[in-house]
Length: 65
Image: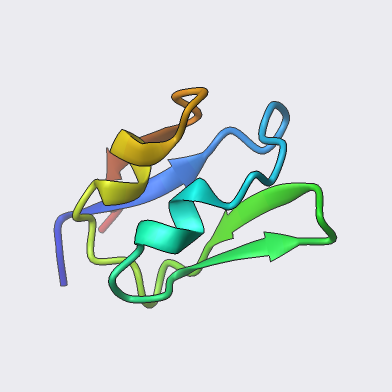
């Protein structure tokens, strides 16, 4: 498991789905058509979603111990 994981700013996410399309582990779902949600058990911290987000609303954080 990676030392990092993705985090979405759900207050500003518009659920465009760009992040979901590039996730190699299918760790991102769209909740109620409103925001993206990361499944932390599947996220490998690759950062592809953060790079793809057109609004820069996804960041990588260090996993807590």
